[in-house]
Image (cartoon, rainbow, N blue to C red; front, top):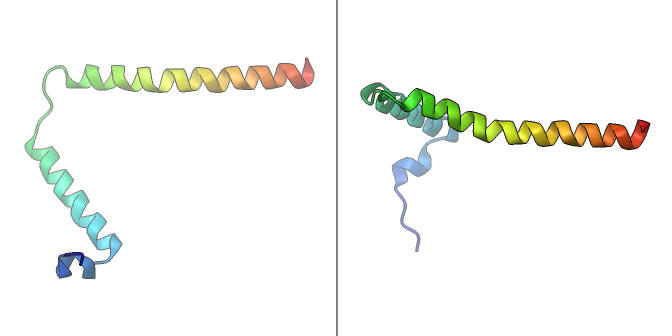
Length: 69
């Protein structure tokens, strides 16, 4: 009913993860970063993490004002 590769089904999860990491590292070594990739990664990280941090700080402030207010 379901077709699988018997070789893949016999491997443990840890072995699969190790093979995937090796493949990812090989791809990463063969594909260098382009000129604007590092600033783009930094901007993406800031725009992702800054709003989350602001929400956490705001929640902390509101809870502390509600309790000690």
